[in-house]
Length: 207
Image (tube, one colour):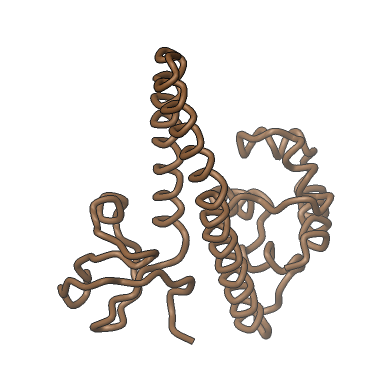
């Protein structure tokens, strides 16, 4: 997906519609700086406003993602290319999120353990107030870390049932409450109803 090409296309369509960057931004309830970043190829429009943007510019979503007007003859091919590209982008994003989770564990857990050990040492050596503060601080820091880790587990990719092969996204509550081994969590499959350890996978469909 060529961001520069898409940006130039947005600029052309905006001008054809007789809109300034500020006017387009106002219609979308965003800043004109965001529109400028699109047109300079520095970012893409958020998925939540793509339909509204296309409506204003009088183009289709496939045309937006392709960065050019599409004829009926090659519409299907372009649509499939865009869907594949979006799928690849989502998969790469999810992989980065799961890699981030590993780095978080590798860095934060030793740091929090260090705070606990330091707090215990200070308590044993008479500095009870400071030692207790470090131990309590460790628990306070642990809460957002655990939440963020669980949020990544939930949002990135899918879980696969070992019984029927169904790949799905569970609720956040199911992820939080489920026993786990690594990235596999014991949950009830919404398709076959069987309980088992469902492993984390990146894609919706099997290769």
